[in-house]
Image 1 (cartoon, rainbow, N blue to C red):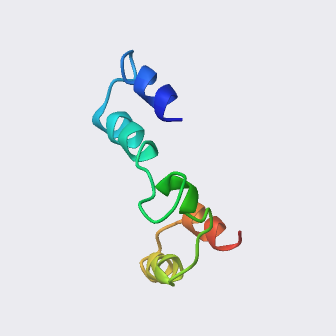
Image 2 (image 1 turned 30 degrees about the horizontal axis):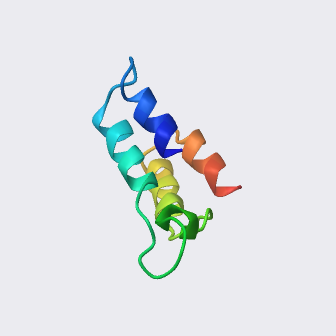
Length: 73
């Protein structure tokens, strides 16, 4: 992944975010073999901010269907 992002950063995708993502993919784990990015869990959790946002939107009569739909998944 580091190589791919480095190559992408040479073309029309040239950007700071692509550059630092390539750098992150190259960081080795200092506690054991492998890369640090492989230790990151690919899961999310809810903290209630989406629900609060939808409630506030309803109170203000503002539609927030995308945020509301994200709460169902």
